Length: 116
Length: 109
Image (cartoon, rainbow over all chains, first blue to last red; front, top):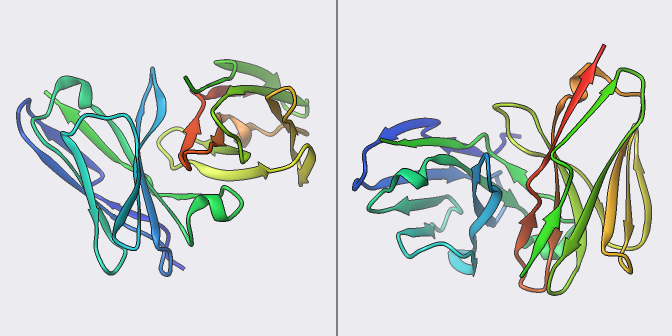
């Protein structure tokens, strides 16, 4: 079956702009979580959605937001972009919440955002 | 605070055995996972330890000691394709998955 799909794969924005990233989870998966990956900080948890509800949120400013649709597809938005937002944004899905299973997440290949 | 510590880099030769350690400090603990990520690729799940002890999956094994807040990933019969970054991740009581900063493994012929 198809894996987790993230679009766009690459994008370049300038400071002050906003960006929306999309994630389509594996069919049947209801949990979608987002992570920011940077060389110095590793993977940092942004938020998790389950059945259209945000269940958890990481320690990121309010400029980072997300949502999940009824078909489990998710989007994350970053407003007023800063240079430090340049990163790989990874989306991961699981069939339930990850605390209900074996800690296994299925990741997409990410959206690489460059802010100039 | 919550943190996971891993060595930043490990090198080994083909056919060897390498161990990547992970020590954690988290509020609550439900399990330790390991992920592999090749350059430019997506992290892929390798293993999970919810209880103390060793879990074996082919050439890879993972160990957990909850009393020591410590775990490791053991890779045997190393192959060139094992060159990648390896992340440990902990499920804490906040239900968030917290990742270590990753260990870059380089396998040489």
